[in-house]
Length: 172
Image 1 (tube, rainbow, N blue to C red):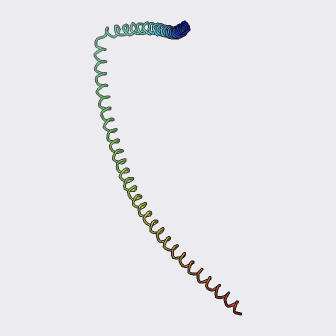
Image 2: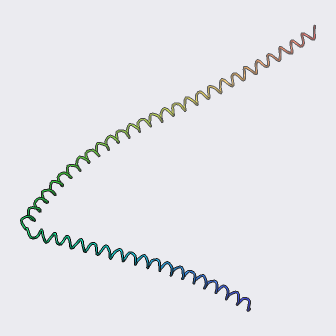
């Protein structure tokens, strides 16, 4: 009983050691994650400071621009005209691209149809060649059978001639 209890205690000890190892590994991972988060926080703080400086500069520019209302209005009108022009150019370019795409699609469709037709023709040719090959094979087998019959007949004739010649020699 003591040995069984000792074995059970050892097993429990091994399980606890494994759990401690897992916990230590998780702790190391957590420390690494914490370090990574701290690094990201520092980077974020630097970025925030940089953005705040940039925002301040932009605010200064806005303040300077705000001093001249007429210039701002003129710039807005130019911006609106430029936006309209860009939109018109984009629309024209889009229509050109769509037209070109439709044309390419049509050409590809025609090429696909031609390829299908060629494939169908090739399949028909292949079937025709297969039929022709089968016919030639059958013809070859028929000729082979005829030749075998002729050879057998000739061998019979030769054997009879040899026997006849042997009898003639015996009679002499």
